[in-house]
Image (tube, rainbow, N blue to C red; front, top):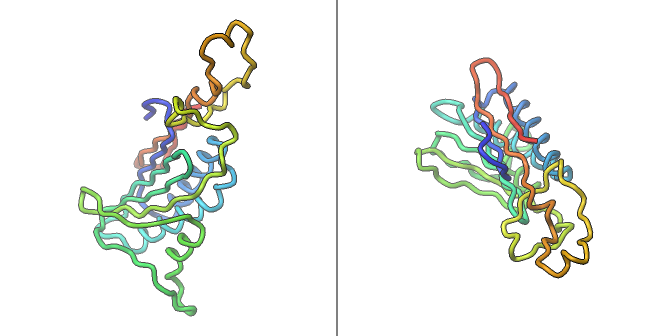
Length: 194
């Protein structure tokens, strides 16, 4: 379901192993679309760990929602489930088969946390820092949309245009893709605007 150009992608799913792999690929594809290739490994690892925690620990079911949001200076990845129990970061027993998920998320992210959700569940999130923007932002451009894949290169203004207001970042104002995925009975599908 595509509403308008956005910097947001949401996926609803049952946190089962095959679905976790699909969401990892969806997140990677969305970050490639947003030209954030340097964040793919960290985001994919973090979302995999959070979804694995839902698969192993969430009650009463494994239904969850993954959201990635592109902000001006960071990317936020959040996983919401209906279990109100809050995970905690603790030292893992070196001989244990599990217990390393949140330490991994903490190690690859700028920050992470947990907050309650209105439905009685919780949201576990982490952020990744973006590289400095290639084009300096102007006050009129706040918040900046991500450039679309079809954006034209920036052109020098004509002498007539130089007398009037000139938009220095028209490609950045063109918009970006919005991703929304809802779990269907047989498969999870992604819709990405392009």
